[in-house]
Length: 206
Image 1: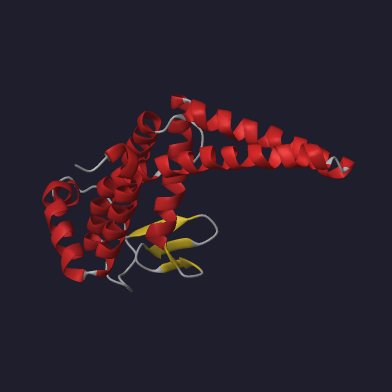
Image 2: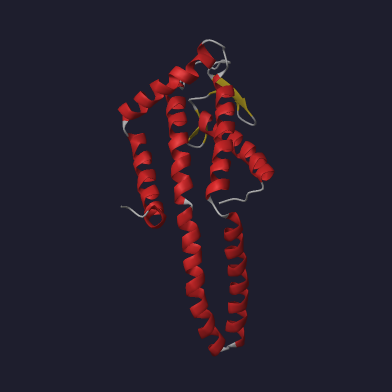
């Protein structure tokens, strides 16, 4: 039997890579997008919700479950404790180097190996929530791609958005450098909403 506690992060990492690779398989994207459209499509087709509003709603939902998953799968107290110990160690090690205290430096080097192990363990813990979040988020992105207006579509309430400093653009067109308007809008909404949620849940960044 596989020891999930020991090999869980590795399995999560492999699963995360598999999910990301599925993005490059068109029939997977289309199939998942079509299934998601059965649930989300009526909001646009029946209730007339503009596509940019759907992006806003979905980015908020994404931010909510991402924050909840991280809150209940990551030991933030342990993470903050390890980070604080590392800061204190770095300060102490730098002072020992400046003073040329070889005995203390050698002692601290042994301590550094143990602290690096703690940091590595904290980093490994983050793969599991990452995999969970990807499983929930990838279908949403596939649906957004499935319903995205074609490139060059006329700008309208249904297919466009007005962005600061950019103006009215189609959501499928490039808004900044190589970033499409819908991705830029999703990032703005997601980052803003996530900050509010994470603050209310009293969790830090990863």
